[in-house]
Image 1 (cartoon, rainbow, N blue to C red):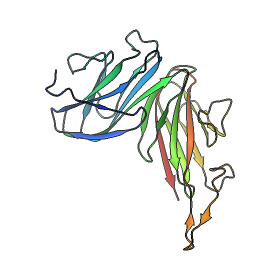
Image 2 (tube, rainbow, N blue to C red):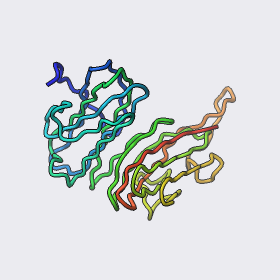
Image 3 (tube, helix red, strand yellow):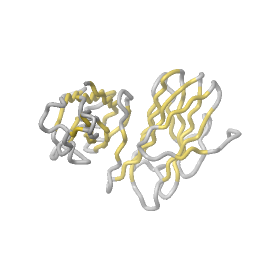
Image 4 (cartoon, rainbow, N blue to C red):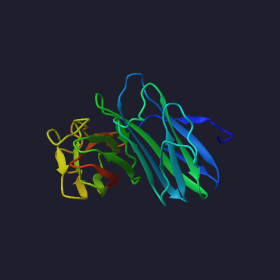
Length: 240
């Protein structure tokens, strides 16, 4: 066990940045409510260096030698725990150990997805977010946007066939209920211009007393469907 077992508790779906020297490690965690059933995705994206990812449930502290799930590739790491995994837990805590194989700076996100109430992973402009969906399952995301800039949502499939759906009005867009969609065989791209009549509906541009035009922010909701079991990365950007 590492000398410090202090855990930084994360809000599900919200990225947390950090940095470590080679050989150092840090614990992150997310709590699962009693009786809640869902899946867990841990997304570790380095901006430099090589961090590795080790995850355990049932309030255990993972290490590089003792863990339940891991990803130690060169670059980004993703751990996905299905709600049907026999090691998945309820009324407990999942902990993720970020271990620095070399000096590193990174972003880590722990997302819980319940079949009853879908959780939303918050997307940051220009920062890719990785996840996994099983066949017929959705992952949902929220992207806070500025009304005066057009949007691009790029879906890159690492495996399988994920499809892309989006809406400004539905928090959980699906194939049956969405405003925008892209469902090609592999990678998908949505480009939404700020001049589109469906862009940020109900957020009228106003003018301040100094004559400056104001653009109230709004949120684009994104749903990714697993047409087949799929791992993917989602990248949201804006341009004026």
